[in-house]
Amino acid sequence: MRRKDREVTDIRDIHAIIDASDCCRVAFSEADGPYIVPLNFGFVPGGEQGCVFYFHGAKEGKKAELMAGGARVGFELDTRHELIQGNTACDYAYRFQSVVGKGLASAVDDPAEKRNALICIMRHYSSRNDFAFTDAQVAAVGVFKLIVTEMTGKEHP
Image 1 (spheres, rainbow, N blue to C red):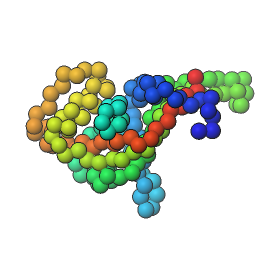
Image 2 (image 1 turned 135 degrees about the vertical axis):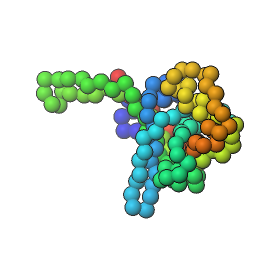
Image 3 (image 1 turned 90 degrees about the horizontal axis):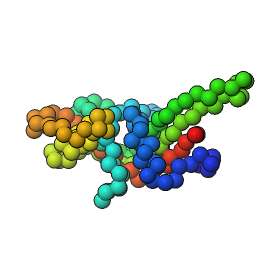
Image 4 (image 1 turned 45 degrees about the vertical axis):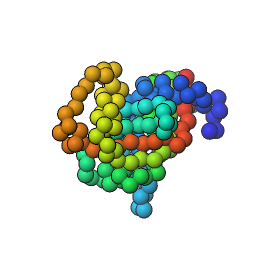
């Protein structure tokens, strides 16, 4: 990172940035160029596999095809945006916090993990942990996970 003065190194602070974000952009590499998709998400810090993001969506389509095969991906989240106005163009600045990283994306097939992932996603947006999903609902939706292999945080306070 070029601006070490803006680097966020405490993992708890990185997790707080993730918690405050409402969209995770996932980037895939394709032969004809990158493909980026914005996604709603749930996040599980730490654990046996490290940090994990969960996403949901259709079981078919481009995103499902790209995630199903254990793709290496990039991801980005950002939050707390604020324009700082100045007297001249060069005096303007922008406050933000962001997290950028890489990981391995794959489909989740295990019904118990899918159910927990869906609850995790709902908890991120509602702060509730009491959602229930029927077996039919779990079977009908595609659930994908991104196991984080590296990530960094940055902020302009």
